[in-house]
Each structure stands twice: as C-alpha cells, then as structure tokens.
Length: 121
Image (cartoon, rainbow, N blue to C red; front, side, top):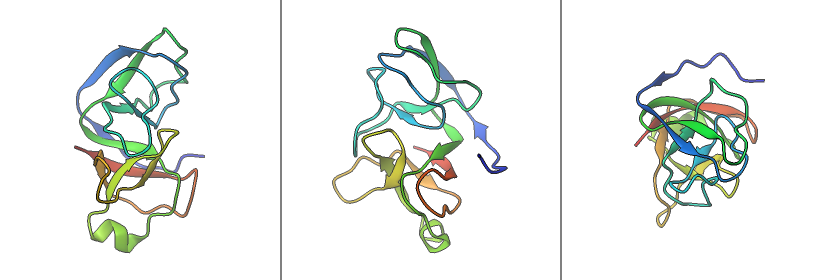
C-alpha cells in the first residue's frame, strides 16, 4: 500500500518500454529498468499500471515524485539530504561515491517496498 504522499511532477515524456516497467521505479534512457547505481531518465509515472514491453511508457523527468525503495531511509538521512540512486530493479537506494545521483529523499521509509517522496535531479 502506498502512503498518502504528495507529488509535484514536472515534465512527463514517453519512451518505448523494452521490458515491463512498474510505476514508482527508475527507468533508464534505453527504456529498460534502471540498473544498479546507473543514471535514470526518470521515474515511471504513478498514474499508470505497469507498462508492457513495446508499449509507450510515461516517465516523469523532473519535479517531486514517489519512488519505491529497497531499503530503509531514516529521518536523519532525509535531514542530511540523502542522495538516492537505483538498485538493479529500479528501486531507490542510498547512493555512494561512485553511483549516479538520481534524486534526493524528502521523506523517510521503514524498509524495502516502502515509498518516499523524491526530488529528481
């Protein structure tokens, strides 16, 4: 279940999905799920059900979005401006030194499968 989080998405574009793309997850520039630590094109829009391969997929490329996470984000992480990248499944994880930063956490999460507000960069 997705908590009552607010979004303020900016621009949304469409790309051709190369595989099933789930809402609230990072997508790469090629239409595939974003890889571990890779730069994301954006986040699959929350206003959709999963997009099938070869379907036009709506991707939010700027603004504040909701992202599914693969780990906990504490309130202290949020206060410090925790940088977020993608895991192998397109879910948000804490970025380390060599990862591309795809956004900054605006809310905390208790663990895998939770959702956060994220400022895309």
